Amino acid sequence: MLINHDTRRTLDTVVDLLNMELDDLAALRGFVERHEISGIDVLREPDLAAVRSIRDRFAQVFDTEDARAAATLLNALVAEAGTTPRLTDHDGYDWHVHYFAPGASLAEHLAADGGMALAFLLVEGERERLRRCAAPDCGRAFVDLSRNRSRRYCDGRTCGNRLHVAAYRARRRGAAD
Image 1 (tube, rainbow, N blue to C red):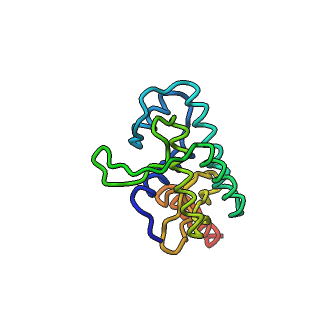
Image 2: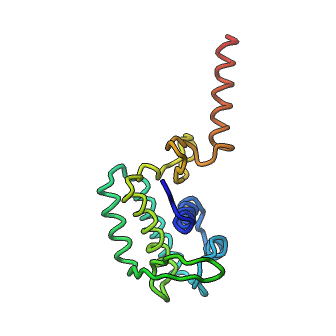
């Protein structure tokens, strides 16, 4: 499956939003800066509440097992954001499409661009790539972009490695008995 750079960055942004602690405006500002989200100058408490709501709706898309339910969720999300596709080449990036209207709030921006990135996966028949970590104590979201759709953990170096080491130690204990 071919995913362009801009869609990949947007999927990464959605995943980070799903997995982060969004406790205050400072965390939200850090998120905006980390993902270089353009056109966002001032953030206020209502922005924080609106972004939390969008995050909850993205979580519903990740957690549903049904493509039709995911499509319904995404259609509503994108429609409410007032999607306005337009070509842009700002801040040193080549031409790409923004789906949010000029002057959109951060929540509208995330809903439009993130909703469309998730919709592209659904259209390609790749909804099953939206996953939660298989580690019992984790549950973080990720997008499995592996060639054979076999990724099970949010991070193989932490969750995956921890479970593999635990299984190895359990086998060793079993062999010693």
